Each structure stands twice: as structure tokens, then as C-alpha cells.
Image 1 (spheres, rainbow, N blue to C red):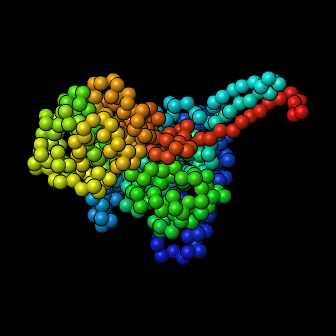
Image 2: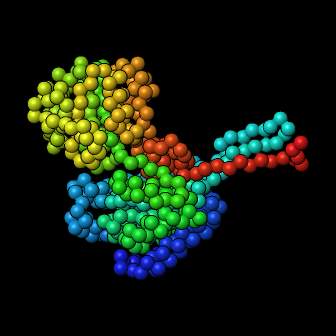
Image 3: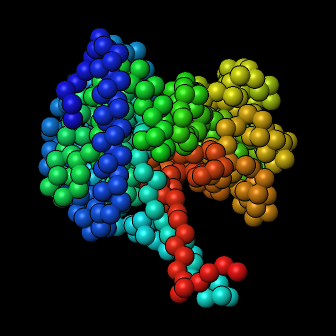
Length: 429
């Protein structure tokens, strides 16, 4: 990687740096597309071992970022996303091993047909090419993104936030060392060596080299990328996720799910931000869940019907139901029935992750059919909308778009396909 640049570097130098990164990534992507699966898996397993072996080095680098976090205005949830610990490093290593164990989507025959005239037609998985990945805070995402891109045959340019610079630099160095040892081009994984925000703009304009941009972070970052990118963007804007407790819910189960969905990691995009409760169980469930959430330090903001049952709840505004809090706050509304719950989600949700708790099979079926979200969950926490938890090994992001991928994006979502047509002297009449 080039020497670290600062925000004071001349515009010409910054533009040249970005162009060089993009060109090198394009060259590396061509070579990487030909790398056999065994070599990619060797790199993944070697990187997993290196993460565990060099954990002390990574934790020391991360400690510098965590110490500097208050100077960047990071709140407690953001510091939690930034922090590494032995458990998170071990989870990142396990994610690498899971990606190694997954089928390689490159060269996968997705469809095979033979036409009446004898032509053989194959639909075969191929890499996208070069991915520009822009993300904030969470340094473990550096590992996930690199793993998924390399296994799917894509070169990746990583641009982490300034608040995680030391952590990301240490992680990139480790991954790059293992690439070289495994005979894979080092430029297959590059880290943008500057904190200057203009670098993002330069790279987003380089659609002749970069095939896909993926922003992962706050809404303002994603909006900027979507507005400036000259290449396709894989994204979601908000994670306004709901849990609906149906009239036929097991209330003990509902309490466990709501507390987990809100509190297990409140700063993530798949944490619950809104609770909907069927009027038929509200008298019993609302006081019960209010106590459980208060014990976790959660502030409830509720509708008049919620406050009638739990007077200590803060009145909710219309904006509260549209807010991704990313912290220990949740909006609450009592609904008359499932149809009202679905309508509320359609009005205020972000098409990310929405859950129902119910013992009524018909209610579960109606909810999954009518709620238009990337993931719809029955009797489980919204926190399961995650690539690792859904068997993708890891994820590079969650998409709420309808093209070209939706939900957690893993290996297959980082590929496209081409048709291979084989004849025996065929000509078209």
C-alpha cells in the first residue's frame, strides 16, 4: 500500500493515487478471475490463522482508534461498533473458515440446456470485476469484505472510516501478507491510503475500472455514494426494523425476541427500532415488556394506547416511527390487528427486516406474504438477518433494492453470469 496521505495533499496527487488504485485493481481482477478455488481457500484459511496468531497486534492497533473515538464525536453505540476484542477476532476468523467451506460461485453452472437444433447453452457464474467498498466504524467488516470479494473472484478497494484507520491498516497488512504467500495478486485487496473524503468522489467517478460500489454506514454516506457513483450501487438506506407481537403470540417468547432484537447489539442495522403490539394482548404484554426493556436501559416512546397501559412511556411523535435510533430507544404502537401492523410497517419501515411473533400459522403466512422487506422473520429475532447467521459465511452488506441482489449479500451476490454457447458448425438460418 502507498504511504498514508493526509487531507493537505494536493488535488493532483490525490487524483493520481485514486486512478492508480483503480487501475491496479482492474489488472488484479483479471488475474484473480483465473485463480483456482483451492488457492483462494488456502488464503482464507491462512488469513484465519493469522488473525488468531496476530490478535495482540490487531488489538493494539484497535486500542488507538478506540482511544481517539471521542475526538471524532462517536457515541457509545458507535464505539461498540468500532471496538475489537478477542471474541470478535475469533468470530472474524471463523467467518473466513466458513467462506472457505462454501461452494465457489465462479464457474458454477447455473443452468444447462440443449436447444432442439443441438446447441448447448450454459449459464455460468463469473465475477463482477472490481468492487469499491466504502464503510464506517466496524473494522471486522474489512475481513468480511476481503474474504467475500476474493472468494468470488473480485478485486476490492477498501475505504474505511477515519475513526478505524489504525485497525483497518493492520488488518489490511495481515490480509495482504497472506495473499502474497498464497500466490494471489496483492492488489486484489487494496486499502485507500488517505482519510481525505475527496478520494471517495474520485473513485466513484471511475466506472471504467470499478464495476460496483457498496456503501455500508450511515444514511448520509449511502446517499452521497448513490448520488455520485457512475457505476451500480448495492445499498440500503435505513434499518427501521419492526417486531409485531400478534394476538396469538407466546408472550414469554415475544419478550425474549423483543429484548434480543433491541438490545443484543442496538447499533446494528438489523436491530429492532419499533414494536407493534396487538390490542388483544397489550394489557398483559406492554407492562411486561416495558419492565424487561427498562432493565436493559431502553427508553420507550409510545402511542396514546401504549401510554394508557404504561403511563411512564414517553409520547411518540410521527418521526419516532420513522427513526433508526441505533441505540437504546424503541418506538411502540398498539394495533388493532395484523392488517394494521402490516400497514404501519409499509408506511414507516425501510424494507429491511421485520418480524412477527405468533402461534397462528395463518397469521404468520399472511405476514410473510404481505410485508415487503428483504427479510421477513417468524418467531425469531430481527438480528438473524445477517450473512453469518444465514449461512453465507459473512456478508458485504444488506440490500433493500430489487436489482441485482436483495437481503444479505454474500458470494453469489458478488457474481453475475455469462452464457457459453457450444455448437458443431451451427449457423443460423
